[in-house]
Amino acid sequence: MQTIQSASWLDKHTLLFSDEEPEEDEEIEEDEELPTRFWCRTDPPALAWRNEYPQSWALTVREADRTLYTSSNAKNCTLFTNPKVLTVEELLKNVLFPPPTGEEGSAEQKERLAHWQREVVEREGQSVIRWYRETTQEKFHVADTIWTDPATHRIIARECRETDPMTGRPVSVQVCSDYRYNEELPENAFEMPPGKPIVERDLTSHMPEVWETLSAQERHALQALLRRSEIAWQNANFAEFAALWNFNLVSNVPRDTEWKERLLEQAEAGSRWESQIESANKQDFIPVTIAVHAFHWVKQRHKILLIRSRLSVSWQEGGVWEGVTEYCVRRRGRGFRIVHWEAPWEEIKEARRRSLAA
Image (cartoon, rainbow, N blue to C red; front, top):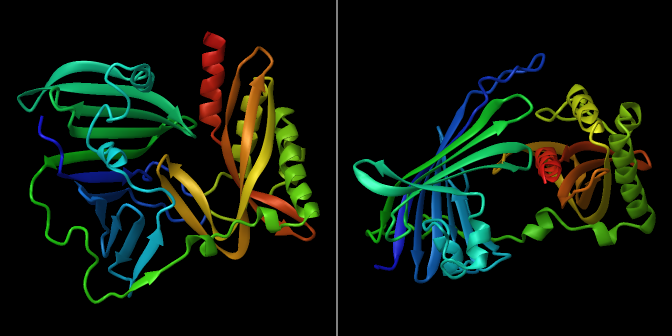
């Protein structure tokens, strides 16, 4: 089998907004298609992608230990140090399925493929393997389809469709096509455009980790805030829950009516919620998930704290879900208020359904 030296593909990611009901005095967003061309090489390992927007573009080049970024609107190229080294194994996960980790038929590989269905189908006159799965990830239902070459495991095409279970509305469609292997890549695929000086930037200074620098009183107040919120949530006490929040500080986040609906829905489950704060970053934007890998970055005049917390949810009849959840918290007087919560409630609901089925 010929090894992969290089590959390229086209990724079209469409964010679907047109079925949304606009808020009062708010203009509805149009569906947004984001075409991205990817190139990768294995020696030395590198991955580059160019995003095409209606009036601009952005280019990212990720090498083993660093990432370079620029755009049509930027005067400079920004250099970041990678928190994790890019390896060939990691790179090939983009173009091979099953990915090249673990031995063929090993317990590790069987576990990774446990939720995937596999069948041989015809595609464009060629016999290929179609892989399909439906999962719940964070707040969304996700349907993944991958078509691969039976002999080489190379990806021929892939598709990902996401739905918001609360509304039944599709929120995202991602289609990857035009996969090409071991063809000559553009000469400057892994280079920044000329004429833009490279400026090194420390990501930690943009969103500094501040948990250990907070006073003991502040840390206690934040942990108590989350605990009170969890108790109100599990007791379906919306008045207590709302007293800890500032619901309408920013747009493009769930409103108080939505949170009340979610709170009452989960109350029947008889759940117990407990969390422990792991970190806190100070930043001037609120990330709001609109699909599993897509966010609105809601800019803020005042700094907020992004709190990452280890959450455990258990039920009276048995079963447990454990994972990480994020709160956006803002100072208010001498205390704090929650302004957004990235709660993976669909994952949690799915964990309970599996527990009941077992």
